[in-house]
Image (tube, rainbow, N blue to C red):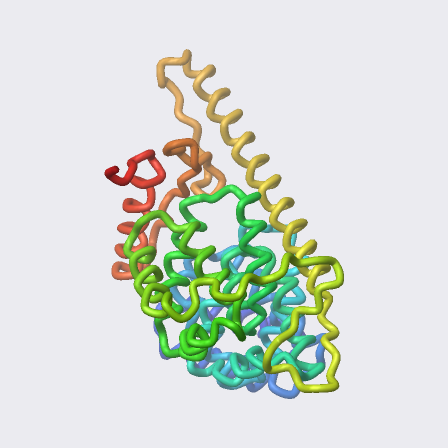
Length: 364
């Protein structure tokens, strides 16, 4: 077996940036064979090296990230991959990269055919292993608010998802967050969430599901996603529409789930996870404010050095540059090098949501 510090292993990781997709596929097969029966320490080092590569080469993450993750999940144990990556990302100090990586992992978890078994595991939190897996992902997923919310929907932890929505009011609602909510609404219409849509027919059994979806509706501006979700809820409004009013959460809430096996206790400490989510999001916002303030200071210094007439322009990293504001809300700059189709759709969503955030009002 190759050692992590051996020169061959870094060369194999570097080959993932090769322009030939066939070379990348062969390289992933070799990396998978090397790591298949490896010990936990070796496997964790491999995952850590992969995350470091994604962190330094963001273009590779954007263009090949999904391919690499899915291919590894086919050839290796996908649960082992997700557990290991989640443990590493939970402790990552680069909250911006951790949020992006969690978003990518979550999108694959929801959409990838290779991860169908993991989705089934999450939909059944009645076993000790299933609960442990959910908690591991949740603690790492806290880096991304929408990903954490969708994880709870996937696990049918609707009361926890409802409580997460209440904390969204304390967060800064950025355009990036609204775009992620927009994408989640469209994913709710996919076959993966068929069980969730059918559960809307049983409001007395799933009252918090209604509260979650109506909460999403209140977050969204009146865009196409707003219309899609509104139409879905209107189609069952005669049956549900918060037919059963949920109780307010308390510290002793047990989060009863209809699918829980009789006689089995729920070992998940839900309120502790909620506090973990709040702490991570608060730390993330503090770091973002610090970065923006530093960027403004640099720009001011450069302007002063140029005589205040634009004689000098500060050269800043796009990832660290202060974002323009529209109507008081920060607007993230579009990343360069994204794919044409998906980038165009995201740009259109940014324009639509930005116009609404700029203060345009619905006609009275």
